[in-house]
Length: 346
Image (cartoon, rainbow, N blue to C red; front, side, top):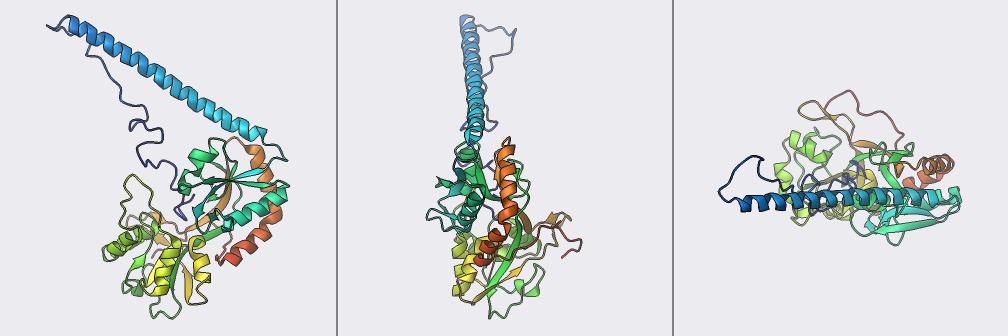
């Protein structure tokens, strides 16, 4: 759920129109009657038209009221669900079934492991509430509907949630073969222009910098191939991080640029054939606006659930060392939360 890992580019995603399936403004099409005071040679037809339009407006008003009422009821149900979850109730964790390496249905994702450590510290059993669709749907379709209570990994300060004090910070990395002759440690590295098939998530900060340095067109076809040439228009297209790293290992790609938690597991599994180099957090767009590559990571709960937030904060203080062990074992270069970005520009 973060710009960091592109899992949660906020739930404004409209795979088939807005989330409620209505018009672009979320209200549907408003049928308006002809202007008042206009005369027509059709006489009765005009009167009937007015009556029909009035009926449509009345129907629209009732439909809108019903929709608002349903929304309020859903919000109330979500709140009630949070209130009903006592200290001994299972900790219901929102989780993706195939969000490798974060969360997997076999519970081998590193965030699945972190959730179990947290639950134990809180004295609560962990119950994963699985979502088969991409994790971008977790907030809107699971957490906010009261189906689950907490998301383990989100950007600190995500406006849709109450977020904990960050429990770690991570950045983007350049992934290369350890024996590569190319030295790439920044976007202005001369060797980045020499690299073939640079892989990265479309629409993310890496793409912004590739455009700035004139490298977007050169790698366009390769990046599109990573999504099997699916268009991101009206749908969320995720690149499998294992594939991104695997292509570097096989020599198909000279370098991959990705959020470290997404790819560290697969770099670690390369038996020393691959290495990661942190992207410096001193990048700026052409217009001078900063492009962030390092992100504080928190846990997130539903807005209004301050009690659960406080309970999680208390447990986090106790288990942070254990969580760090999981992250280090995963191979993630863990950073202490700091204030980005640096003042220097590249």
